[in-house]
Length: 52
Image 1 (cartoon, helix red, strand yellow):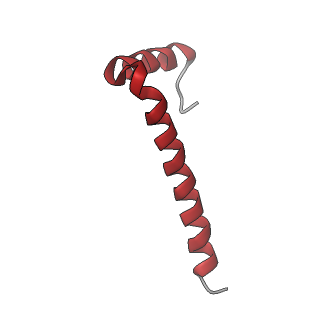
Image 2 (cartoon, rainbow, N blue to C red; image 1 turned 135 degrees about the horizontal axis):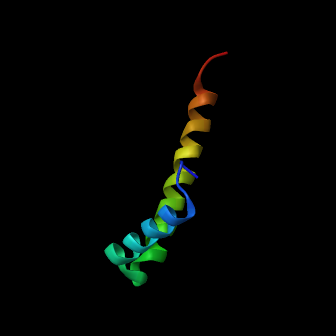
Image 3 (tube, rainbow, N blue to C red; image 1 turned 135 degrees about the vertical axis):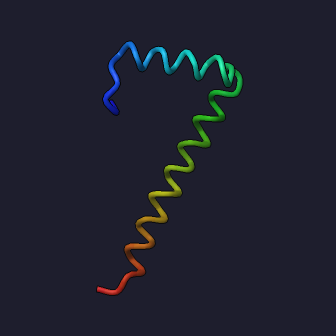
């Protein structure tokens, strides 16, 4: 995943937990998911607006 091995991914997750704390992490992930959904929706709408 993104050229990262298991060890690097675990270190990244620990750093994220230290920075944001376990209380804010679920809301952070929820907002990230909503942002990705809105981005995909915008990309689909943009493709539909272009003339063929």
